[in-house]
Image (tube, rainbow, N blue to C red; front, side, top):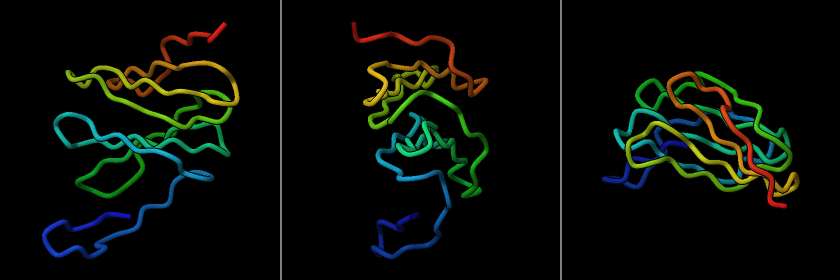
Length: 101
């Protein structure tokens, strides 16, 4: 759901994966990263167009997501998998995965 903060009204709804849990916005505001806990994916949204531009498989039960201050990477905590996935935001691909053990 896209919200106009000036009027507090919904301006659009963008379908993403199953059970969206968290969202992070890139530093320039052009991309949003939504964790889809049921699907094990992250939906990458073009915020200007209001469309999903990529769906990135990350691991079991992704919940939290954060984008680095330079916007180069997104870190995703995969609760059910006990891992953290690192997404290269230029290619929308996982470049690393760290185990919690």
